Structure formats: structure tokens, C-alpha cells
Image 1: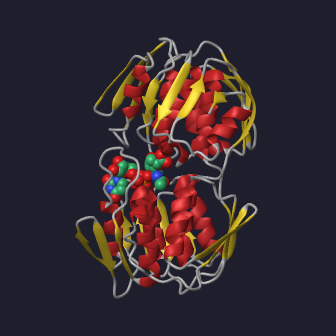
Image 2 (image 1 turned 120 degrees about the horizontal axis):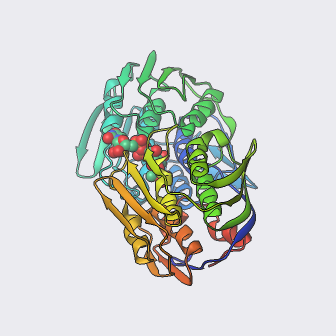
Image 3 (image 1 turned 90 degrees about the vertical axis):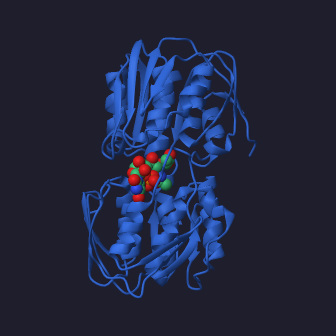
Length: 414
Ligand code: EPZ
């Protein structure tokens, strides 16, 4: 895939786009496969770079992956616990789910610390606190982390922050622990429910996913299963925002509306007119866009992953909009790039002010992280003239076939 995206903007999109399966669910479900003693069949795994990396890491561990149509079959019969000291581990943050999965299955893991988008400090102290509560010993030397446990015993764990990653990693490590593990102040994201429902199909005994208290009763082994990954709520939100910006009747299919209520209600406040069906959102059009304020929160609050794409739309809204990202206070690199296109955005210590109504002009800009890239694509669709987005690899990590999907809506993009 070329590393530069070119967009000639300022014309309307219309038609239908179908959302792929959820990246942030798939990146947890793939490492979970090492817990299975039988074959796991996954349908509609998104075809994105992060998934390709995780499949390579699974194969390093001796898991056999074979793709047939829209199903990938994983066979973990011969999984072996080699050290994950491959540079691929650093390509994404979600590789850290191998910590919970390998600790859970083998009571030992040695691997590089995770990589991923540079959104400011992204500690894993809550993950490690959970592993230690289960009886694990942790040693870190440089960027290698080693976790060992003679045995894993269920315990009460309180998360200081409702961390998605820590909640998932503890669930994975606790599957085979003796007795009950309780995660208090657990994250409630839909991806956690999706993983829990897959693990329970395999014989795990997890209750409460989607609430702030999750219990995991340890069992001895996990069977195989067939699982269909939920739609990607962030990809859906991105296309809905793009449709609000430059759409003229765009229907976004394969959506679970309950997963993006914070976004759709915010867009309605801005004057966007949508038809919300049982599994789609149709953006019918919008009157003059109104400025609004957003504060990101853990689910079901407004998703931090959507504040960057929404910033591009706010450039069109009359008046000053404000965004406060309480989850990643340094997630504002997209503002510098949007300002190069003529936007008027100021940001400081976790908050931004977007002075809307200034025209955007096609420019030479750079994606700085995945959702920054999404914001720049939307801005390119809005802008007059040609926009060139460098380092487009960030975008391909989380948006399956984005060029083809936008071209099908009439975008002039390559
Ligand atoms: C997940 O990251 C997502 N990534 C992120 O999406 C998403 O932005 C984030 O959840 C919040 O919704 C994946 O699912 C792979 P967190 P994660 O643990 O698990 C602090 C995207 O664009 N924290 O809920 O890393 C942390 O610093 C990506 O798809 C600790 O302090 O998020 C941050 O401020 C970007 N200690 C906050 O919690 C810890 O041990 C949110 O982190 C863990 C987290």
C-alpha cells in the first residue's frame, strides 16, 4: 500500500458504505486464541495492518492460521511459549494482550513492552497490578518484560482507572486461575463484551462484562468456537462524521447504534440530520452546522478515538467548539496539521478550541497517529484543492479498505 494518500476535495459523497469488524475487539480476540485447546473460527476479521501483525505473532507461537473466504481458522494445538522478542511486537499496543493470554495459559511470558500510537504516556501499571494480584512476579529489564507465576489464584482487583486494556488483559490471565477473580471499576466498552462472549462460548465463566464489575471463575481448559466479531464503532463514527461534512445522503451499514449514541446525539446537537435504523445510520444532510462542546469519557461516554475526526467537522461549524480529552490529554497532533490547511484551532493541556467557519485548503500534511490520519482524510474531503497526506500507514492500521470505501462514495482519492 502506498504511504501517501491524495484527495481532491470539496465535492459531495453519496451512496452506501459498510463498516468492517471492530479493530479493538479483534486485537484482543486474536491473542485470546492461544488459550484455546481446540480450533477457533473467526468470521469477518478486519483486513488491517494490526491484524496482519498479530497473525504473524500467533504463527511465531506455533498457532496455525488459515483463511478461507471470510473465515480465518486458528489451531492452537501446537502453541509453544516462545519469547516474543520480535520487532513486530512494537508495531502496536495491543500486542500486550499476549501478556495476559500467555500468562493465563503457561504462567510465564517474556516479551517486548508494547508500541502503538504516540498519544502521550501510555503506562501499563494497571495491567501489571492485576497480574500481581493473581500471584504473578514481574521483572522488567529495558524494554523487555518477564512475568512468572507458580500458580494463578483469583483475587479482587480494583482498577484506579476503567482501563480497556487492563480489563481485557486481566480477563485473559484469569481464565485458568484458581477460584474467582473480580475486576472492580472495569471498563465497559463493547469490545470487552465481545471478548467475554467469545471466551464464554469456549467454556470460560465470565459474568458482568459491560458493567463495572466483572467476575471470572477459573476453569481448566477452553474449547474451540465460532465467533463473529462486532462491527467497528469507531470506523462507523468516522464515516458518519465524514458524511456529515461532505455527504449528500450517505448510508453507513453494519452499525450497532447503541455503540455510538454519544456521537450521534452530539451530531444532532450540531444540526446533522440522521435516520438511525437497527443496523445502520443514514446521514440525510445538515442545516448550518452549529459549534458544540465535547468531553471524552470511558464508554458509554464520548469516545476519545472520535474526538480527532470530529475536530475536522467542527472546522465547518459556525462559532467556537471545545474538546476536552480526559483520557489522552496529549491527543492533539491533528490540530497542527489541520491548521496548515487553514483551520483555526488552539490547544493546550488536554483541551482544544476550534474556531469554525474558516475555509480549508488542500495542503501537504502528515498523519501523526491513526485517528489523526482519519481527521486529515475528512479534512481533505472538505478542502478546496488537493490534499496530500504523508505517513498514511497510520491510517491503514485501523481502517479496512478506506480508499476503496471512500471512492465508492464518490471521493476523488488515491
Ligand atoms: C484502548 O486503548 C484502545 N486501543 C484505544 O484506541 C482507545 O483510545 C482507548 O482504549 C480508550 O478507549 C485498543 O483497544 C487496542 P486504556 P488502551 O487502557 O487499552 C491510562 C485507537 O485509536 N492507563 O483505557 O490503551 C492511559 O494512560 C486506539 O483505536 C493507565 O494509566 O486504553 C490512558 O490515559 C488509540 N494505566 C487511559 O488509562 C494503565 O495500566 C486509557 O487507557 C492503562 C491505562
